[in-house]
Image 1 (spheres, rainbow, N blue to C red):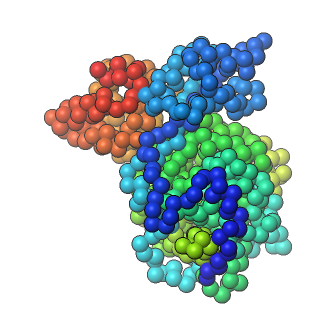
Image 2 (tube, one colour):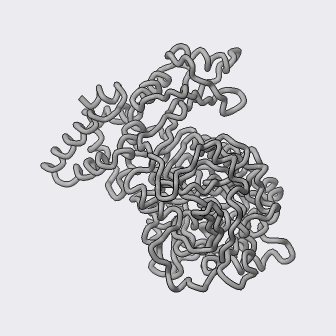
Image 3 (cartoon, rainbow, N blue to C red):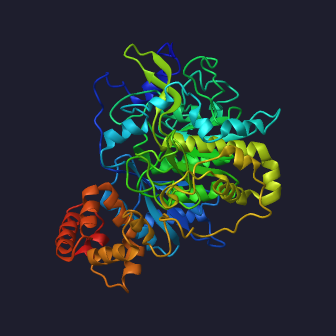
Amino acid sequence: MGVSLPGGVGVAKKQRKRGTPAKRGQSRPVDRQPKLEALSVVLAKAPGRDPAALARTLTRRIGLDGWKIEPVVDDYTEVEIVPPPRGVSIARAWDLTYALRDQPEVTYASPMFRYLVPENAPVRARRASGRSSGDDPATDTDYEWSLVSANVLEAWRLFGAQPPGSGVQVGHPDTGYTLHPELAEPARLLVSQGYDYDDDDPDPLDDLTDDFLDNPGHGTGTGSVILSGVGSATGGTGPFVSGVAPHAALIPIRTTESVVLISMRGLRQAIDHATTHGAQVISMSLGGPFPGFGTERAVARAVDAGTIVLAAAGNEVGFVVFPAAFDQVIAVAASNIRDEPWSGSSHGPAVDITAPGESVWRARAAREQSGQMAFTVERGNGTSFAVATTAGVAALWVSFHGWTNLVRRFGASNIARVFKQTLQASCRTPRGWNTAEYGPGIVDARQLLAAALPATAPARKFRDARRAAVAVDTTGIETLVHLFPGLPRTRVEELVADLLHVSDRELPAAVQDLGDELAFHLVMQPQLLEQLRAGSRGARFAASSRQTARRRFSQSKISSRLRRQLR
């Protein structure tokens, strides 16, 4: 099924803001170097002192004249310090971060980058957007197989006369929306409540530019899986999408034109935007290998407000990406019609649950050579669709039990933990399922809704001991351990201690100081990461590999503090 609309509909604004799109077949040059978007700073509360004035004093003290201070929270205890348009080098970004951390009034500081997810990015962009080389023949005419797999159709029966998903808003940080017939009902698509943080525009429209690494229509596809009307595009007579929560509403928030080009600041803004606009669920079909402290704090604010936050585990990488890897985010891996893990799905102890993600029917929007929009329904692969399915299930759960009832019973800040506990306890576990890598099993929406709510909310834990990573922790080692899946923690500590020239006793302090910069350079330069991984194989090879890694590090754009440590 295909539908075309005039090319000028709702698109001229975007083309003017972003410049003339490249001609088809041509690509805009892509700068692979990370760009500093802001310095995220948490200030200690100082009774009797104006926090806004304190932030200004700090910027002057470390020479940030011309930088803009923007509050993240109203009391200025968390701010973002935005650089001038001329930009800042990576090394200076880290030097300034350390200068801020050294200030007695600063609790924590971290850089926020816009970066290209490294390693085979073009291949990942195609896979992330659902452009697969072949679809599973078993799904050729089974347009609702993913709903059957997740037992969604049976879950709908439990609603009786109540519309499944009604009364729930889903925040959707992605590439924006289009007026695809599978998604365009005004009651379903809350455009006026969204925002475009990629272009700084009130309208989060996806302009469908298809340049190098872009994922045109990705937000349309994932959004349709969450809440498209039941067989709405064709009345159920041809390829169609039936959304998991067909009567929920979507808040589209454009954070990027590509799910492999991550804006740490844009994602933080999108999460906060969804929270302040009343989203009970946030679904993120994107992620990257480097955590963001500001993003983690935004997730914490969302969870405290009663929002269930979910994210894709990742595609074609060896570990679960962020923000899915944060403890308070539900990380979703992908399965296929045979209840097997999708071959491209990230996996590991950070996965919380698995859901259908291979050959899932979803809406697709693209721009033809004529400039017209082409709207179709096709299949796509990826954890993007798995998390969209699970987000729809979360919307069903909130709708079924009632938002007000859940808040009254557990308190808003406990809702996400109650949902996660019930989701995992009610899932189905196929025979031979690897629970250590793909969570306890596959989402079962009917069992989830039928399960009795617990008497009390589970205790809040600072870290789930079964998980592999957090962004910032008291030891500073967690993010580094996360980059070496399958390698014992003690071996990772040995590698890092040797690299930094410190003893076992000195390692915690060194990693707490330099660990996140070290992790950043490792994920931005995969050859360095591989060199260290190689250093874990045999004593002789290990020594030469670590020497090579140290030499490559010294040639990188690193801070003066890390450079001194590597000498």
